[in-house]
Length: 248
Image (tube, rainbow, N blue to C red; front, side):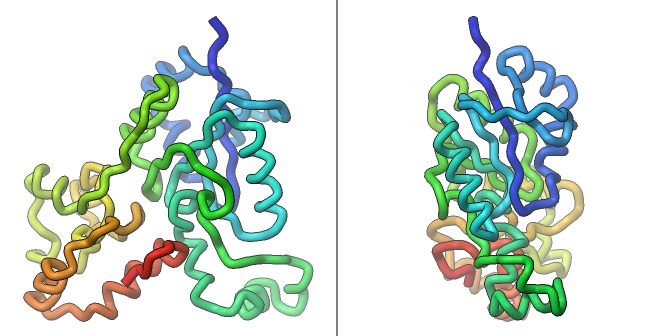
């Protein structure tokens, strides 16, 4: 039986999510048994210019060339997966949306800035239809495998829409606020198994905001620990400046 073809594409990003997939180890070998990877810049030099069953897209869309390229990929792909924060919510590239685009270009490229066209950063779904989302910076490997399985089985993958705090409590972590550290877990979409907090870090909001954040609960936490809402808004802007909803 013919294996489904899978191609990995990247736009404005660090390609860290591709590295996450490349480092899956034995799990990656299991995936390769059931699909045919036809393009994957981090691990192979071959290019694929034909239709593909599954396109896995990393990176945000930042200029007209990228818009044209992602549009062509969408036309050729049976299923499109956006994975990683840059692709799903705009990611760190979206921070430039807080400023005038020409000011950003001048800052980066100097007097030759007109040679480097740029637009406001967009997530992939803000340009073309996306079938599946894998959030995170970088992606959480078990979730990526889960989504890929859903794609191959033709089933849906409901992206979790509750706070990271829920997973954090299930993992019996001491709350970062109790440690005197500001964390974005109360307003950030779960699905990563509170990966960062499990390893001693804070939540940076890389999975995007829950659709209906518990504002009263969040404000109660901030008031309890004397933290300003402005600080939280600034922290959320690191990943969430392309969101249709206000990151505040």
